[in-house]
Image (tube, rainbow, N blue to C red; front, side):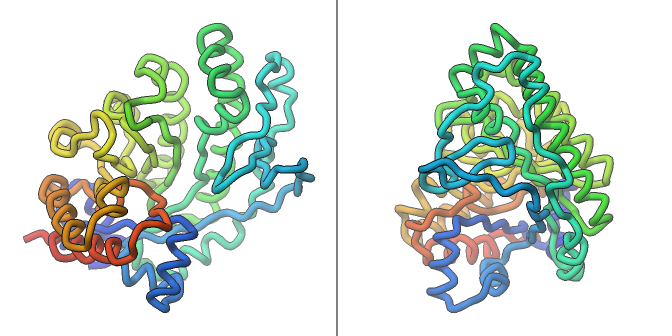
Length: 347
């Protein structure tokens, strides 16, 4: 059975030959794994048994002149610094009026080149499930542009300003993804987007506010993906159990990456309550088990997760966070993927 068919069967809540596997990694862990296993990128994906491949548009827009100390600038003009994605140096729309928001230098969809996407997707010969579309992290961009505390206050005091910022961002993200899907035709299978609405202790905004400000824009992207016949999967870290019913209402197909160490994310409860309506991706604890465990404990922990999550399909196995960190022992990651193949078989 091809990886592509295996993944699409899981999205259809059917049981394929085995549970599909997902590998997301930090650049640092990936480099370490390549060196230790003496493999190239594709060889490493094959060794891990990753059933997915991903294609990207290429940014060809204006190159900003960074301020001293800035390491990069987002497409919405927010300069950031620090490790990884870093932290914003300023919040450009923190004190903006409604008119200033509309007049802001919003990015243009033609800043993204999609000319190579079809060829890159078709190069895999239909073997793998292809992820595509713009990442579209509108929640994080909203925080960057307004500042987090200021954003929460404006949701109560000036909701029309928050709506305006979100509207402009979603116009850009939807247009870019539409370009990608038009260019790639049927070569993409899953529209993969990312917004971390949760923390270790629960959602970062209550269900009422989530429905008021976030859900309409999430629904817009889901409808876009469905218009092109794609499954839509949301990367959403943290404890978001209270928000899952709303996500299902707007027909989200999959949720990545389930974090059982967060409040409310009990795997058995999630599977019982939502497993027939939403694909879950992840769930093997990368917070403690993968970093602190042994290959033996990782193997057993992965088996226990599979026992809960695999019945009836609707599950993709992998780490509970998309970026496996550099400090994670390679032997533990190999033990996880080997256990997925061993215990993820359907009879």
